[in-house]
Length: 242
Image 1: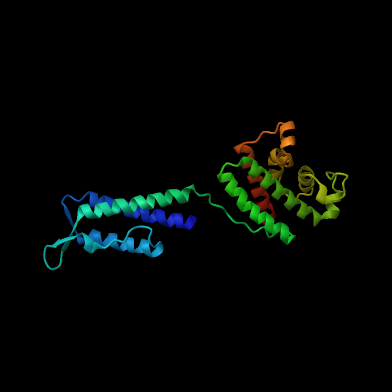
Image 2: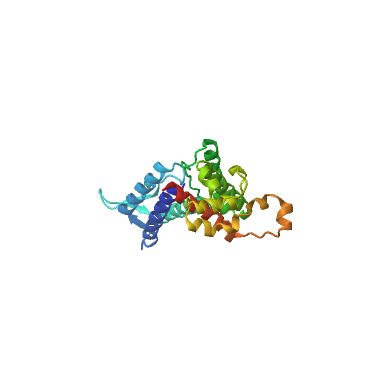
């Protein structure tokens, strides 16, 4: 979608520039050169995006010939066409800009294929949630993804993880809290300090899943907490994929 938006913007500004040529025409008719340029550009646009604007047939706007070589075309008719085409392009571009652009990521460093697929799915979903300003959803999805990634990471290094001074007494790593996972991962230098320092606002993300706890703990969250949650996930991805 991002590539389509870029190409459509190029066409839009090209055709907008040509509109200025016709608007600056001092007479009711214009010679064939700018008409030929416009016709080629519209043909290219329709080749890439069929039916996005009406076809442009220069002969529909033909006025007369000065001699056997030079043709003239009706400016007002072409300006009407350009107004319609530019209006359509502008509407489509605005609609595309309003749609959230999501980035797909392959969490190849996760050992468990099922968890890997779930996190890849959730990563796309939480980006759409962020674009829609669904802050609670972003925090919950980000926290769940971070917890699953760190659990997978530490299970693969279970001996070192359980022996860490930061480890809880619970020997089953899959039952550790996100705080436990963060502390041990930091102690073992498996993640950067940037991830650990930013992680505090999302360590209790699980409480958001239960309305009663959210109410009792008086948990507050807004765009800033959601941004931090997504940033922590992105930093973690960077740490483990490089």
